[in-house]
Amino acid sequence: MDIAIISEHASPIGALGGKDAGGQNVYVAQLATHLTRMGHKVEVFTRRESSVLPIVQDLKEGFRLVNVPAGPARTIAKEKLLPYMSSFTDFVLSYIGKRNKKFDIIHSNFWMSGLVAADIKKVLNIPFVITFHALGRVRRMHQGSLDGFPDIRFEVEDRVVAEADGIVAECPQDLEDLQNLYKAAKTSMTVIPCGFDPMEMHPLDKMEARRILGLDPNEEIVLHLGRMVPRKGADNIIRGFAHYLKTTGKKSNLIIVGGESDRPDSRKTPEIGRLMLIAQEEGVTDSVLFAGRCSRKNLKFYYSAADVFVTTPWYEPFGITPVEAMACGTPVIGSAVGGIKFTVKHGETGLLVPPNEPRILGEALFTLLTNEELKRSFQRKSLARAHSSFKWETMVEQVEKFLLSRMNRSQLKTEVTQTLIYPATQTFNNNVYL
Image (cartoon, rainbow, N blue to C red; front, side):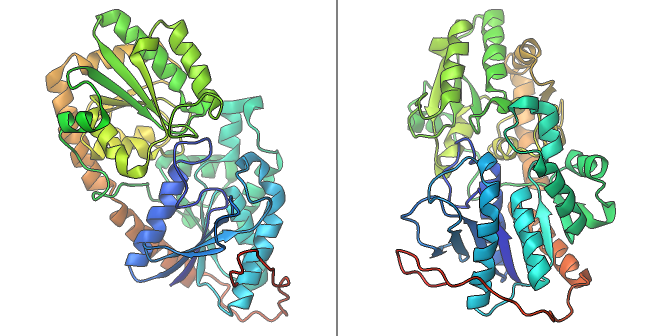
């Protein structure tokens, strides 16, 4: 297949850990890489966030990255991107027209990419599937007035659900939400979870991992890793960790990885500043270490160095980090929401707790960290579950089959009879061709 992947705000080469860079970036990168390895031609379209980026990049992974000039060439919060989606669509149509090609199918990621794909389908009759990664109505239920997306998101999502040739839900909860909140037809959907790459995430010797990171080899380590936004629940983790320390009196450290810069900077990442104040209020400032942004190649050292990985978001469409921790043989304590309650088997590979309940989290930490036999059992079973159920290679094979089925079943294979008028060719400073 000739496949276009659209991911308007999450580039497959984006640095992770910031406000808008996380699981979707990983998902798109792995999807493009593995589809390419399977012999498909893949081009990923994402919004150009820097003037130094070329429009077209042929990456070593074998797929092509197209940095679409839509709006200012700088980072813009995804909540503010909708006004630039018409320019995004126009560029992609121009790109396709000038290269005289037609993609067999589009895989869109997130609701705005779904809007682009739906508009392209209207012009070129290219079928599309979508992975939403997050749903507007679910977000609004949990975030209320803190949700910065416009209300029109709901209308757009309804349209995308109605017009998509297929929908990839990331977990059973995602599928249920799409059915109940968007009236999505079950026959158009499939559940395919996210995964991990065994070449990238695998267990390392704990002492060696700690040595590489400059961590004390003898102290207990609790790890949290992810985007630095309030809904990820790092404040709950700090309070739960403080409760655990007060209960046991043990010497432990909580390491929080993520942010907009390699070194923790509360000016660049205001959430870090808020979390530092919470650590101070709880009297655990000396035991909470903010590590800043981390490259993908170093994540396995943090996962392997930890005694337990903790993630307690308010809600979570899937959550890749628990799977990565399990792949490194590290047990997980996670909130019983969304994809986490699907990936973590309570009492078998880890523990599930309600979000925003620090005392219950502290008790779960006590249960796991004071029982070496239980911890070792969770470690073994976490690793086994990750390998049996969540490898990217297996996940993308399922996506491939779904794309083929949607392409073949699409009723849009008739010849386009209308005259296609493409936007005028644009001239770029770096003279990259369309």
